[in-house]
Length: 144
Image (cartoon, rainbow, N blue to C red):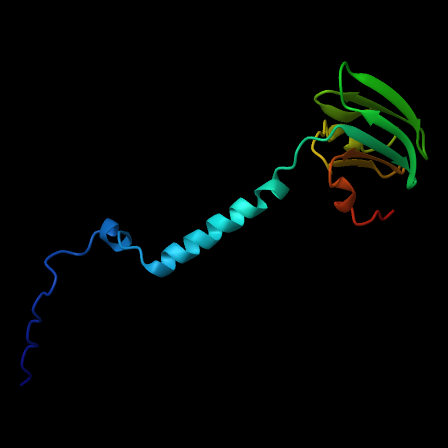
């Protein structure tokens, strides 16, 4: 007849804890961590751009007005392709107060204040851009 299988000796008295698996950090781990830290440090200025001060308003690609984000809130009415768009600029940012477009996406976007930020009203063919040090390089093109 067949013999019972021999018992294997227990090499571990208890299973390893989860903490003991992650305590050891090798040189490759430190290298990867250093590369990630360097990448975050170098890209930080592009992620968090400084606030802009000047605002450029365009209708159908043509510059129609420039505003400054400073002082008390002031408004300007710009004639777009389908009607008048009212824009408000203040120290805290710029926004579109009212527009004749049906979806009101540009109005619901709220205030923008960082350099390179844009609000666009496609039905009116109007764009509002916050200008900063390098904001001209942020926009590649506009498609209607």
